[in-house]
Image (cartoon, rainbow, N blue to C red):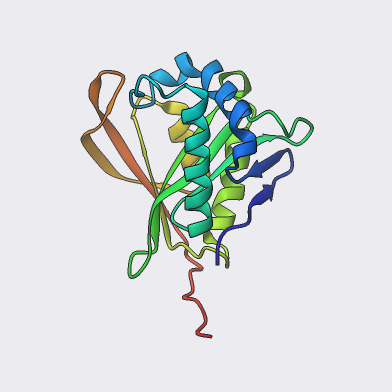
Length: 192
């Protein structure tokens, strides 16, 4: 079973990747390019080309359908064609692990309104719910990213430790704190 292609929260519409979103997603990425540079890995020179944005969405749609990764682009319900953020689950591992890695970003103009908290609540409910059934979600955050740390703590993630020189971001290897949330209600799938 795979995750729902759309999720709703009180203010947001979360949509799985599709080629139809390409122009709006590219606009989101371009208008936040400078803002995200401090937190994101460096991009290849052609990253912001329309064809590359389309390829990423096609790859994301395929991964979503295969159940290997789940990305949702989210918008305000009153403006569904304008993404203001994204949340994603990657490195999804089944078997004895039943775990994945969480990532997210929010438009600079929409910070401080609780929208990321709301989007992540919807994502976590789906990932821990009966369609996906993850046991654990992990996130890595730079210690100086106070907003990101706060949203994770507010969502019930617990700090597990520090990974030194974890990712190459903004021109240097950066330390990251590792947080995780466990699905205490996890149950294995019922045999058919």
